[in-house]
Image (cartoon, rainbow, N blue to C red; front, side):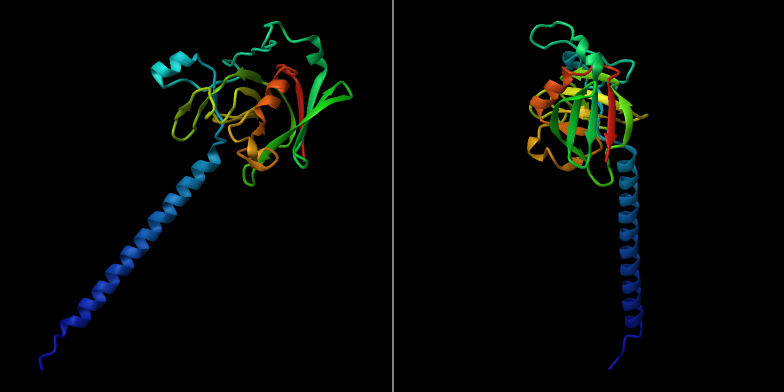
Length: 216
């Protein structure tokens, strides 16, 4: 019987090639995971956009709102009159442990609302802040895909935005939600989610400059 001496070499070559392909696939997967994780940590995916809705429909590309460009529309929604002077004495205390935001007028507790807070890895920052700007019917721009979500039932921001922290590429604030069943949980990416009926009430009680204390 004639023995093919090259057969073991062929088998060894095939095994070696398979090992190389496996290592290459694992390396690519690890590289993709590292890139995705790095990108994820760069963004808090809340970016309200202060523009005219018709403009968005036409251009699909708009700048992200900043403290300088956002519009403060602090008026009573039904009458259109300016907010009362009482808002000057209002301050907010956000308690992350019991998932509540407390509204104080001077030292008197006026009301409180249940909230959702940042999930592990995306914790809502603790500290002293103030309201930077306020938006009605904000448009949300996804920070990675740049997809725009117009005002409506599918908008993750609901119909009010109260921003109190701003970085170079991201922003944190109070906002409504299209997932009210998650209120009371640690599910957000740093922001403070509220039921839409509650964020509308809170919006009428604060103004730019209102102090906010976020504590554990």
